[in-house]
Image 1 (cartoon, rainbow, N blue to C red):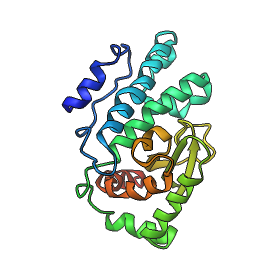
Image 2: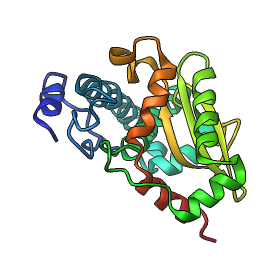
Image 3: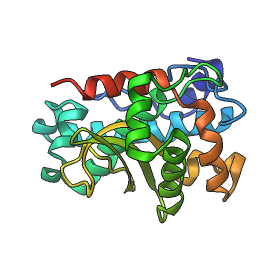
Length: 222
């Protein structure tokens, strides 16, 4: 963890103990500069993401069934839990996935031949897929997420409100997430203000294609 990230956490209250663990960022808070600034990362990971984990652990202290589930298991049966668990459980899982979906500029690799073939089959080209992804993220009203998923063997793009994701049994469009971008304003506002389209366009510079390739290969396994 970077010194700045440690300071952000130290400045907040002690983490709520429980079965769900808020992991460190996989890189320093300033590693995604200039696309995502260090202050945004510190606030986003150290306060917002941390808050979802704290609230989820508070809920788990009162619900033994919840405490026995992994985040992935929780997503698959989220309809059985209150809205607070849905929002905070989704926020915890979504951000874990989001941090792992990014890497410093120039370190994220490229789509594998297998993934690129699927992208070209289902969207026409990598550029067309990115345009469709950005359009879905840009048109999400209010707060939410945009996703590239595998659905019945094919790639698809969708968006979800709030902290929902395609793994949830309540999601309008379900599938296996390969890539997801956070379009809540706190993810980009310090640098991009209200220009979500600029953020979405710049974000591709920090996509961790190495992680996406691994997810795609795993999703295709029988």
